[in-house]
Image (cartoon, rainbow, N blue to C red):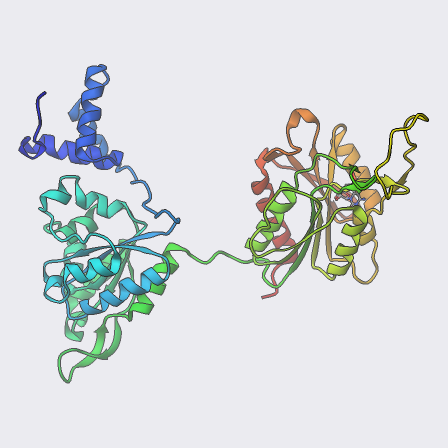
Length: 474
Ligand code: C5P
């Protein structure tokens, strides 16, 4: 069995292997195995064909978020007196549940040790572009791409000049040149260096290139008696800026609004063990509750029996019957918006058996049905507490729009979300929905037909339409 020492291959082949393995997210050795397998199966692509293609369109590396879904930062620590604060920055980032992988420039190692950075980040620290072990896998490409954000702290005048010019003669500058992730710089230098026209030009160029900065702040310098703009931003500020880039705050168009939602089926007891029910899974109503919450609303979800987890941040009330549901809905008023997505049973038995009904010689026990309260109609017709926007659902198995229009008139709500629930559509219990939104335009009823979407997409579209209609108060 022959063995192969990759380091001894010629430079073009090595470069090809490194780029190809980085592109495919494999180690160089794994990549060689794949190539040999492809060759034996006659599927190998020519080297010349793949190198330029890769250079033209760098493949986005797989996101390197941790097991717990935590975002990852490559932190480049530059060589300046502020480098000691980078150690605190690692701790501040970890407090925010961000994974950190450190790269130290040669100059940075005069101020902090790789051991300290490694101990705080719980990761291996990188420092050398020509480190056989890390560069064996095109390490600078991986460090540039296997993260969600690159932070440079402190960003020295020299490092920023190299970035502005596109140099790549050490690991830090090579990572910055190879990056296809956002970059945040925390500049730190003497005020004279910061105000030097060369630095001003470089900073302007970097900002034009889409690179973000935090600081520098004004204050005292390490040099005795000097003060001015040039102090690195505090670690807490840098961590906050990085976190903001990683997890930008979502718009909250329903902030300050109270949204009441019903979902799921109802169970109407026949006796202590039997009940009347339907096939509603509650997924659509739960998805609307989650979307309304994500839009900043204060959400109350009144649901019949379903096998779904409470959406985070939503106040969930679990009920059994239509009458329970009505009581909970009335108690939850006032609301700015009420969405009735529950598949409420239309009827219940007139007299619920207190004991399990028995088979008798007389045959089937007679089940006398009476109508349940119509929650949607009841709330739509309220005088004082009627929510300004009341939305009903029309689940139909035939003549969808026609039936939905008739329901619209009967129920007195403002919008109706109509959907075809005939068995062939798979809507009941399924994950997709095709809906039509009926609204009023004066005396006219408008019908807006949406394409087939997941129930989460329907929820998001409905919530954004609601947000446009009711607006936010804060
Ligand atoms: O009359 P139908 O059940 O088809 O009406 C559907 C709409 O009315 C849905 O919005 C549903 O949540 C609501 N509804 C209700 N109470 C009932 C029956 C239906 O709130 N008893």
